[in-house]
Image (cartoon, rainbow, N blue to C red):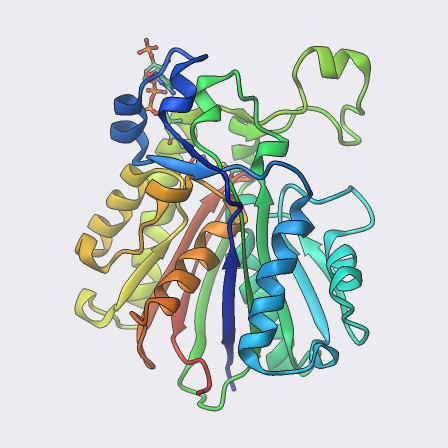
Length: 329
Ligand code: ACO
């Protein structure tokens, strides 16, 4: 028995921020950002919370599936920008959508959030614990972004991707395999210093800008290149897949150079790599489901396509899922 994605949708805020926007107040340039990251523009949400990015995507996802909201029995939200510490964002989403028969929770795994949540949701479906999981990867990164720090301001954007996970009508389709990793040594390179129990919020933490992203970009970069590339190659080897057998690599969108290195290691040409970082930057837990949703909307995915999802993020967390595309239609 396998679980599969039976519907998918995404939402991006309307406000487009191009690279030139940053040139007016940061020592940076459109050229530097494009060549070092692959990003040309991103979307910033003017107001609202992460749940407000999720709700329109979820409404569309449920509508496309043609089911009643009452059939959703579990909500999982992968995010590092929850609306609140508590209640979890899953509860906020459940309430806003009126999912009266659902339980749920949040997953915190940064840029690997969607991959970890997909593995979790599919095992719930396989075990019978849930039948129709609303799986949301969403982040309002502007809520933790230091806009005056050129090392991070240009990298991130806001967005949400939502899918429904159900039992596949074909056991050879859906989530076929996953390899997931965590290693806390990476925490020193990518974290938020304050606001948690380690260092509760105070005037001092606000004055010291400790509620923003802290990132040692070079160390994250080096580890991401190795981690994402290795885990993608490993899942191919484990499942006897040659590069010709892969329809698409679906990488987390953090930096085009990390994506290219991963594709290279897998022996997959860039024509088989989903890339939209140029338009949206890094939306953390949302990058992979937004890619899947866009490629699906464009009619580029066929039943039986082998998709290798690959992620790397804070923790460090990293992993890969082999998804054989099948919308059960
Ligand atoms: N504009 C212009 N110059 C810049 C900018 C900028 N926006 N940012 C950095 N620079 C400068 C640096 O100060 C440095 O200058 P110096 O040589 O005078 O000291 C120079 O450019 C090179 O800096 P590097 O840090 O070596 O630049 P690099 O090529 O590594 O790119 C980047 C930086 C984009 C952050 C890259 O390291 C990266 O992508 N890292 C990984 C990010 C990532 O994957 N994050 C994980 C996801 S986040 C999450 O999980 C929540």
